[in-house]
Image (cartoon, rainbow, N blue to C red; front, side, top):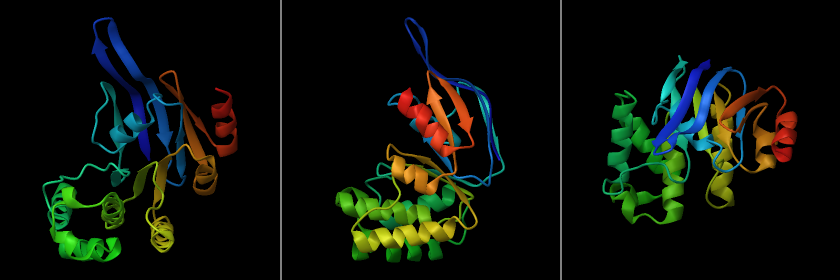
Length: 216
């Protein structure tokens, strides 16, 4: 379970604290695929970053015994000066993976970028970066995958490969998904968190959450 305990995120301003999220108390169960809904600026990406451990609450804490991914999206934060291989090794060290070779081989094969794997990521085309980023995320067996506006990338064949791989992963894991595509949310999620005015409400019904979101 992922437990948000009195979680607030704000930034100081000359007029006082600007709250993005305020006093969130939510338990996210392990056996549900969760959509995070909210208007632009509601704090969806901020919440994902905090759950993924790359940002921190200003107040409160997030407690979990899950192995959680970073937020998987097109803008995933790889070092553009380092090669694809070097970035994989760096991510492995961060997550305590000692047997790096199988991860390297998986990412190179899955991403289909060939010899570019040993070139700086900054030289990749946008399509190559998307394929590489998705491949890195699938190279780890996370308990929970955080997905920010991304489900599958590339051409039709590559999208199918992404979908099939993610489907296999979800046999033993769950996802937390941010998306403005309601069809994606209905297809992949069976519960939701609606963010509005710094607050959050958990919904057992995705359709009810979408209804409230569309009327907010």
